[in-house]
Image: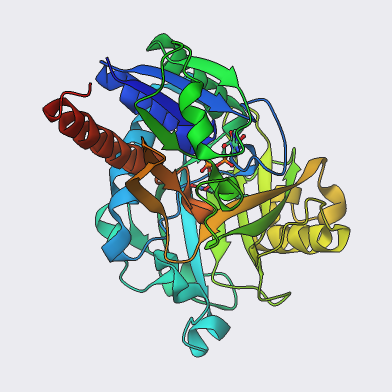
Length: 362
Ligand code: FAD
């Protein structure tokens, strides 16, 4: 039976471990420095909102297309997973459209006539008379919001149900990971799901990986009904606006920032005020029309999106005689692409197992 070590217990590593375990026929160990329950600047997944706002361009949309049906099913049929259905509202500002939506069009979310209109349920263009002031156009569709504090532990529980074992561990070099299987045997395959730390991991040292710093404010106020986001904001080029209410009492996430190459783990109080002002302006129901003083703050937070020049890396590579399947660099879409990426990891693992069996090594 092939032995697999999954390095990393963020949404990427856990989803891979689960999908591999469901397939059966593997001995799987998840090894990680951080596990669900931890809050650390080196561990991105707990800080995410998280919701589904398709970001890829059509050519790279496989990961999100394949993930959406799974997240929708979890939201509708598996309440204990911590997801609920919410309406996403994507707004293009007049001033951004006037300048050609240059910044916003770097991803697919704000495109006119987007590919995801065929994929996301209940998609509709927002009629002009329903648009907020200053907005050129926009669309709405059915999405989900994930309470990551519930969902990550739920993934651990699902993995455990299928026999996955968990271990804490820090590896300095990827080749150390194959010694960490709970079976005591050397792992045949290591899945590298180390997120932003892939740029510091020996044997990988991917210098195209960088953090895109996201600052958030979590509040008790409810943002009923819809999750707005807009194509830009007046405050700064690397600041953004989004609001989403998490399932099962997880509070409401107000965001945010997208600060490239910024590793600062500390919430900036001035940015926090701007985040709250933008959120209350876009979603006045949050405070019943009152100002930010009426927000009840649970906590301020910062997470580092694992961005990568050239996009996500999902590929196999032999390092020091061990097969490694990489799955890192998901930037701001790690949840909404998680099952699509895990599906590709399963394919690559299958290819390796078949190849090695042909050569009678497994
Ligand atoms: P991580 O969660 O960082 O996990 C990495 C794992 O690897 C950890 O367990 C770590 O301990 C382990 N590790 C790393 N190096 C080592 C080592 N050397 N030895 C042992 N263990 C190691 N995505 C969405 O889909 N929707 C959203 O709405 C959304 N909103 C976001 C909002 C914010 C503010 C932020 C910050 C992110 C958001 N994201 C969102 C992006 C999403 O959170 C990330 O893409 C995703 O969490 C990346 O997960 P990961 O498993 O690859 O990395």
